[in-house]
Each structure stands twice: as C-alpha cells, then as structure tokens.
Length: 209
Ligand code: BEZ
Image 1: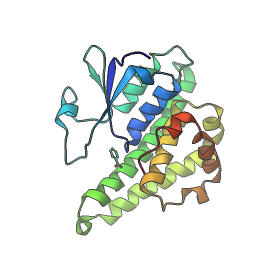
Image 2: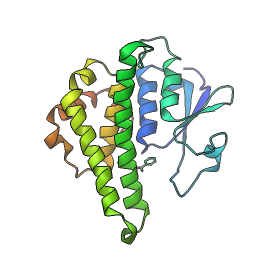
Image 3: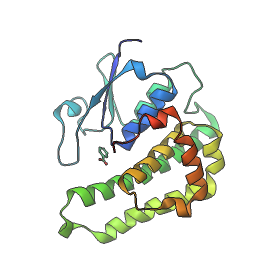
Image 4: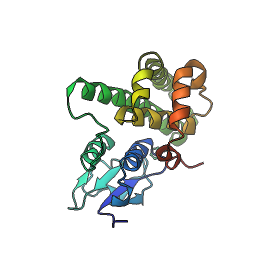
C-alpha cells in the first residue's frame, strides 16, 4: 500500500465526486489519493476548498506538487493518464468524441438534477419557480430517453468514461429523486444500471443512505 500523494476534496453525496471515485477504483489508483470530505453548497463556501480553486469547484484534486485541478472532467482526464491499464477515455478518434459526448449528456442531466436539488432543498418553498423546475425536469427526461433509445449498446460495450458518467447520474437520481420512476420508461437503461451497479466500484461509492 502506497502513501497517498494527492488529495481529493469530495463529498460522498456528490455525483461528480462519485465519478472520480469510480474511476479511481476501476483503475486501481485508490491508494494514491487521500479523501478529504468537504461540505459545500452554493450558499456555504469552504475556505480550504476555495484555495487555488476560486470558484469552489467540487471535486477538486490537489496534486503531489501542490497544484489543484478541477472540475470532475479535468480530474478524470488527468487520472486516466496516470495508470497503466486500458484508457477509460479514448485518447483519439471518433470514439473519443462520442464517449465524451455521452459523458457530457450525463453531466448535463446531473446539472439539472442538482439545480432541482438546490431549488427545492435550499430555497424557501414560496420562492420556488415551478416553470424553471419543470424545465430542468424535462432536460432529465429527454436525456434519459436519449440514453434509452440511442446508447444502450455503447454503454454496455465497456465501463468507461461514458458508462461511469451515466451510472453516477442514475445513482444520483435514485438518491435525490427516488419517486421519479425512470425505470418504467427506460427498461433497457434500468437493466444496464442494475448490472453495472454490482461492480465493486459502484457498490463502494454509493451515496449515503
Ligand atoms: C447533495 O447532497 O445532493 C449534494 C452534495 C454535495 C454536492 C452535490 C450534491
């Protein structure tokens, strides 16, 4: 077991941090990173997190040389260059852009889910903007439909950046929107998610109960 040379600012509820943790598991790099639990919300910044990371992005990774990199996409790219196994982000060609685009759609779904979370959990109910909430919910539905109709074979082909990102997004929906019932309209995605959820990297990074 090696001494960690990097520090990951993370929160166990953050789906963006979960992507990084899944990749660390999948690439055998967990030992290299010390995990620093960090509480943060748009209205309660964390001074340690903000150091060298002025926008307070979470997750952030402090490297061995002291430099801080963020956000999750950059951290994933970095960590994927630091192991000797098959890359989880294709280095070039059309596969790179397709897999990164699927990952980007999963991140966009997550952005919408987080905005809903912040609006409903942090803002007083009388200030909730229903039209805005509805539009975030529609983004989520359109993204789920896209994965269901266009990406199951690709997601099933290997557990890489695209699959990790979609799995983290679905896990967050189950965590924060347990009544959404997306499995009913997306049975293939549901089957795929049930299967990948058995992976040790998914099991050991589940959001807190
Ligand atoms: C959450 O509690 O949903 C959450 C916490 C930290 C980052 C993102 C989401």
